[in-house]
Image (cartoon, rainbow, N blue to C red; front, side, top):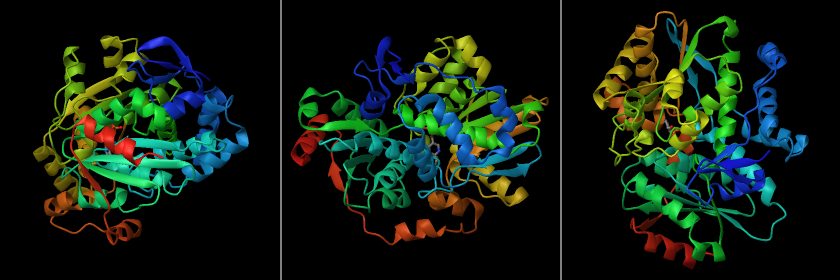
Length: 436
Ligand SMILES: *Cc1c(COP(=O)(O)O)cnc(C)c1O
């Protein structure tokens, strides 16, 4: 399959190019040339398939012409190796837990899949591939761990100094070896800007084979479609139900993956785009105007994004029609106070501990269900384990959050990181002096 740029549909590239370059030169983002609709037989047999075979069937739609089936089986076997259970919360409300991977957030799914796909594509190359990642907290850990010790690949992670939790820093900046961390004196948007600038800089291209591993890489989004199908598979008679899914959103990769899944036939009525006070997409859904803003810091910091990169993919999926987009997505946003209240009340009523991101998703769903009595099943994505945000969650629930063992292990390690300004010239110098 070929991939086109959202900025110029005639700019078609191979799968290899789309995976390894991450992003086209024209400021667009790659999209698959076609989004195949899964056959009726797939939906009939979904409930009897396991998560990995389901993922293979979906992945095959995009990859079969380029990657041998046995290789794809291996990639899925290694990448999709932890469950995404659906858990009952309240009447009409279930949560899809996406935090059972190594770094306790949903980004493990995309990062693990993409790292193995890239490793396969560069295995015969003489050049080392350098992967740049801008992170607002969780991507860095997922990507660093996904690529740790993968031969032929180096990773450089950029994160905003002081704006991520100690746990997030420990997960991304304690590995060493082929993983380098830069703490940038600025915001996540600065980190993203530095990465984008380096990717299109001709001086850098001369000495480094660079790519990015943000949600701008289409091969992080494609594996995220797997768990939407895996979620519905766990609902009895899912085909005759009226289902909505609430997605706590920042850069809108997760939601875009859901929209791609819907295009493939996922029987979901609607998605809810739930954000914190960084609400440029809910604003767009209400007004038809997209106006990027500087990001505002919140307690759901992985969603503190003022100019969500995947928005152009959403426009592309719907031919830029505001009307069509609104049919499939409702936008809604919440303050930190509302988020804290949701964590408290859900804990009190059901005993379940939400993390701040999942809490935003829960609030979005709850609001939607109140307005739509006809919907019988609402899901919200629980994108991170509450232990990752225990500094926020524990004072709110006035109780301790249990730390999973894989997280406790990270906490014992030493942070190794380099400080960097938010100026591109400094980043460029770092890349050029540290290359080779
Ligand atoms: C990254 C992240 C999000 C936002 O996901 P997007 O795909 O960027 O919209 C939400 N919650 C958590 C915990 C995250 O790490």
